[in-house]
Length: 404
Ligand SMILES: *[C@@H]1O[C@H](CO)[C@@H](O)[C@H](O)[C@H]1NC(C)=O
Ligand SMILES: *[C@@H]1O[C@H](CO)[C@@H](O)[C@H](O)[C@H]1NC(C)=O
Ligand SMILES: *[C@@H]1O[C@H](CO)[C@@H](O)[C@H](O)[C@H]1NC(C)=O
Ligand SMILES: *[C@@H]1O[C@H](CO)[C@@H](O)[C@H](O)[C@H]1NC(C)=O
Ligand SMILES: *[C@@H]1O[C@H](CO)[C@@H](O)[C@H](O)[C@H]1NC(C)=O
Ligand SMILES: *[C@@H]1O[C@H](CO)[C@@H](O)[C@H](O)[C@H]1NC(C)=O
Ligand SMILES: *[C@@H]1O[C@H](CO)[C@@H](O)[C@H](O)[C@H]1NC(C)=O
Ligand SMILES: *[C@@H]1O[C@H](CO)[C@@H](O)[C@H](O)[C@H]1NC(C)=O
Ligand SMILES: *[C@@H]1O[C@H](CO)[C@@H](O)[C@H](O)[C@H]1NC(C)=O
Ligand SMILES: *[C@@H]1O[C@H](CO)[C@@H](O)[C@H](O)[C@H]1NC(C)=O
Ligand SMILES: *[C@@H]1O[C@H](CO)[C@@H](O)[C@H](O)[C@H]1NC(C)=O
Ligand SMILES: *[C@@H]1O[C@H](CO)[C@@H](O)[C@H](O)[C@H]1NC(C)=O
Image 1: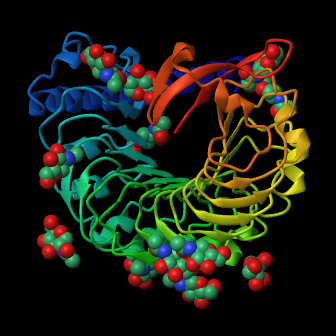
Image 2: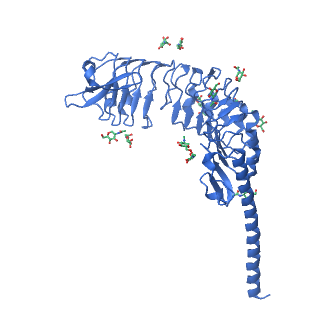
Image 3: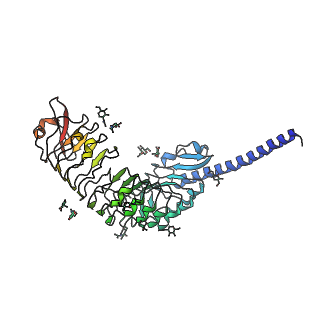
């Protein structure tokens, strides 16, 4: 065979392969297009997707759709006025990895039909009207990396099988009607970075499971108003990735574990001192611990914490002086320390960014700020009273003061 013939044959073969491949692709494309048309019909033509028409064939360019090699991989159907069920044929989109149905009007039980979407990695059903339990066999969706079921009316227990979804990075179950509990098995989700269980006020009162401390990649733990009781486990200190811990508005007691650096624990029944090394990482932005039973002096480390933006520790039993450097933390804008037993003098200089200062009901020796809190100085009002404009030093710098 001559060289020329070999090359020709190769080209011919490539063309044939390409044709065949192209044909297979266009068949898949047409099938997927048909699935979209069926979905639109099933959902009774919601206005946001009127552009989904048989003649508008270039569906990969529609804003709700992402394709990979011409096959549908992502469906963004958030805020699309869908009120019908999720149909099983949606999984005829064999390559679907992401389904976002956030903010629709879908009711009924968890759509177990999605178990047939074998490549599904991202599922967002938040802000709908789903009811009933999260099914025990939810771990059939074994590829899931992101599961959002927040703001629905799911009830009963969060099943232990959630702990089998070991690919999960994000688990959002906030604002539901769970009246059972959450499983310690969540602690085995070693890839988890974000865990949000907040505002589940009907949870059976439970302790914060020490098993959660195994979540070494967790950055955010949000459990506001989740009916937590008992003490914060000491082991939480070895969650080294934790950046944001919000366990406000529970019934936690005991002390703040000494290894914690950044946390929100307001409206609990926590006692003892603040951890000594509060700003050790140099990244502390907010100290939020109001409405507790904390006592002792503020840690010295707060006097050298330039990252600090707000300190909100009113209504505790703190004593002693405010570390001098705290007042001049360059970004400091909110200081709420009323209703404690702080002593000492108020400083001459405060951060230029200070816009809210609440200091009433302490034992400061220099109380002249409060004498400036008069009717003519009202500049606005907030949740718990009026905000006043008060000069704080001889050079005429002014701050807003709120009397609560
Ligand atoms: C989509 O699915 C088809 C058939 O299952 C497969 O051949 C193809 O590789 C998949 N495409 C992508 C981008 O995953
Ligand atoms: C939802 O979509 C409507 C228009 O269809 C828009 O006005 C509204 O702002 C959107 N809401 C959200 C939360 O995105
Ligand atoms: C859906 O969410 C995506 C990503 O969060 C956003 O870009 C898009 O605007 C949202 N679509 C609607 C209709 O709200
Ligand atoms: C949950 O149920 C309550 C009544 O039990 C209802 O008022 C509320 O709208 C429902 N919320 C959702 C998101 O389904
Ligand atoms: C987790 O998966 C294993 C293996 O499939 C299974 O035996 C076990 O029952 C599952 N755990 C739960 C709590 O469902
Ligand atoms: C939890 O809620 C479900 C559904 O609303 C109800 O049937 C069940 O009795 C409740 N269980 C408890 C322990 O309150
Ligand atoms: C909780 O953690 C303990 C100690 O690490 C372990 O023995 C136990 O199996 C864990 N429980 C669950 C449900 O993961
Ligand atoms: C986690 O913290 C607890 C309590 O502080 C401690 O006993 C335990 O050894 C720590 N575990 C690891 C793996 O660091
Ligand atoms: C606060 O905790 C203490 C024990 O640490 C307990 O005696 C007290 O009753 C608790 N107070 C409230 C309001 O829960
Ligand atoms: C506050 O803590 C002190 C110990 O520091 C304790 O004696 C007291 O009972 C606590 N008060 C409340 C209301 O929990
Ligand atoms: C102060 O705030 C600014 C703007 O948010 C930020 O860029 C800067 O890093 C902050 N300073 C410190 C010391 O954290
Ligand atoms: C604090 O004030 C300085 C200068 O007045 C400004 O550059 C900085 O951005 C402010 N920080 C914040 C967090 O607003």
